[in-house]
Picture 1 (cartoon, rainbow, N blue to C red):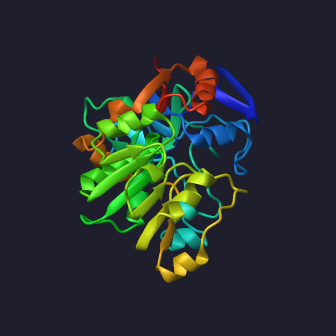
Picture 2: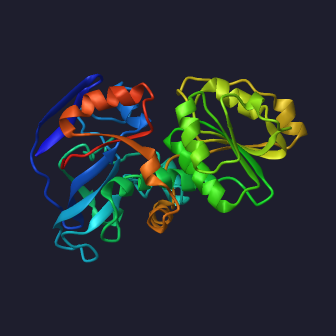
Length: 331
């Protein structure tokens, strides 16, 4: 089969590799859509220490089951599935505490085992979530990032009286915005430096958009979410949380980055600062939300490419062009 292979940092090839075969509890999925993510950039740039090169990337994937292991009973050939890429060990301190997303020997499809930037991928059957016939595979491949957004909002309080501010109108910020709007928060504002992304946010019915939070006529927000990972945005957002409010660090900052904030404000105003890491008991709910139509997937998927164009698509994604870029291996 054809697959993208990252031989080492900065070394991307598209080549022929052996077809996968299922173990007793596995299936083989013909990949129809695989989303690109900031994690893929970190992988290609050599910034993820758990990667064992060479590796086929791709952890946002959906496709059709084409082979089934002998002990698999709940899936059949032809089923359309979305794949949860997380591979917690189940034995470490955090797995035993029910926090598999914080697994100490953390592994994932597309990072520590071959991923979805290939014609086929072998996955554990228990990691496959069936979808109704007719569900577009491109939409199904959004379930993994959507499940991250669901987990993020699991971590914070929000109710009908809350005013919410999101920094970042990329794919993740817009997924969070749609979930919060669906939850019925009082007001929902979105800040981004790119007007084209703010236009998409505005089309989704948010209360206000701006290129700078200072442009918004507010005394603060009950919930402030960073979906950028940019230190300047994080510092600005921390200063705009109301008394007894919450700041959610959702965006992925550089591991060596640091941000300045007022410890006195956190103490004196009882501010809660919360982090959210990846997927945690949220994949099935994300699947159900997508199937129900709660998320406008068409507005988010702006770029597609074939396997042979993976490298150029990744570099275009790096520039911030569009929103979600997906590779379509079967195209």
